[in-house]
Image (cartoon, rainbow, N blue to C red; front, side, top):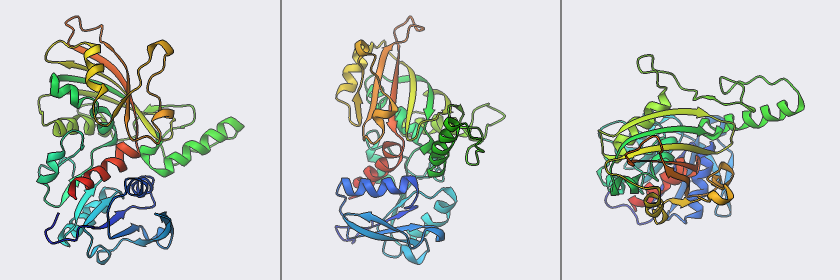
Length: 340
């Protein structure tokens, strides 16, 4: 933080009326984040709305450069173009920006932070700290304590990503298209490229013709290496959009430097920060979106030896995490807490 600021900072949420913005507001309230003032910013069409915070209505303002005067911490969740325009402005006025877009994540001078993994990186900021991709956070937070104990050399993952990752409009499209499907009515999708009700499809980002990987998959690969500080880890990802409202699931198989057992992984994760074991083979009860939704921890289960690796170096597991919380808003607020 800038020297000389008051102990209780002025905090701004940029993109306050979006799905993540609403969750940022809730996280700040639940975690009793100290502040002297909270400012809510959004687009011109949302200006004048009010949102509840600590028992009182707060007015939403149109985002302007002057509105950022005096802000100490800016929580940005309004898309890359807004971040590229306004985050440097906020920094020039003395703020530290925690940015939820992809605008700065792979900038070598910008820390990319998951507080359970690399909290010390926060101190390296030059005014902007990047919040990682939601699928990356949910995938690798449970892997970090394993990586620290027995380095992961290779990771293969498949994601089952909820509508919330595409914003409030995609969540509403899932609701409305499901109602239409059940009523036998025709529904024309306008937010996502394919019918969403009772369907799943490859993640709706551009595919690189050279690699065959889409942008979401590439983000997970690159961000894992940056957050872990390990450029040698081999990662392959397949990202899929599924008809779930707000919790992402991920199937993970990882190979370690030394042999590792499922029991050892279970023991490591039992006390790991930010995760909760949900691993009951007898009842066939494992991580599910319905249980992860609205929860801070990432749920981890289906921990088992990878039978395709006779060397005993590989383990498979399944995780579920709330995309709007740990995948976005909660992680951003945790980063802001590191600034206090």
